[in-house]
Length: 211
Image (cartoon, rainbow, N blue to C red; front, side):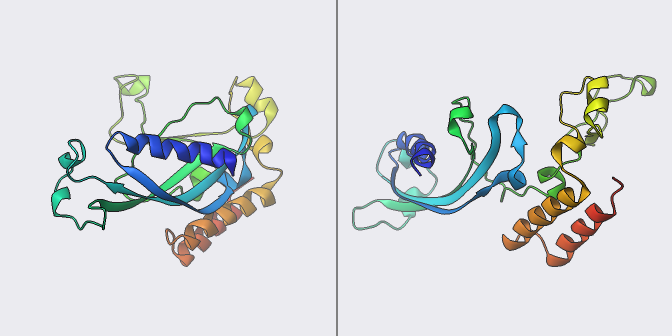
C-alpha cells in the first residue's frame, strides 16, 4: 500500500497548483494488468483504480478561471467540492521501474482496452504508411491503422531481428491465449464496457484463430 500511496501523492501535487485540496482518496480495485503479462525486464504491471475527492476555492485567483465555478454549490467552508476517478498502471515491483511518471487527463470517456490489445498477437498502430509501389512512400495512407503480427516463435523473431516477443514467448499454448482473452473480455463485461454477447463472440474468435 505504501508504494501505491507514492503514486497517489502525485495526484495531490498535480492539483495543488490550482488551490485544490485533495481531502480523501479511495482505492476501489487493484488487479493484474494485461492478464498478468510481463513487460521486458520490468515484469508484470498492476492496475490501481479509485477515486479522489477534493475542494476548490472559488475566490482564489487561479481557481476562479474555471468556467461557472462561482455558480457551483459550496460547502460549510465556502469551497466547491469535486471528485474524479484515477487509473494508475504501475510495475508490481516498483524497484524495477525507471522512476518516471506519465500522466494525462482523459475527458473523452472511459479507458477501454479491448482484448485484441490487452492480449495481443501483433502490434496495432493508429497509422499506415504508403508502400513504395503505391507512390508517396512513407506518407500516411488515408486515416487507416495497420497491424504488424508477432513472429510465431523465437527463431523466426531472431531471424527477422524483431525486438518484440513472439507468440510462443508470450503464451504457453493456445489454451493459455484463449484463457487470457476470456479474462480480458470478462473484465470489460463486468465494468459495463462490453455486452455479454460481444464478450462471447470475442472468445469464440480467439478459439477459432489458427495457432
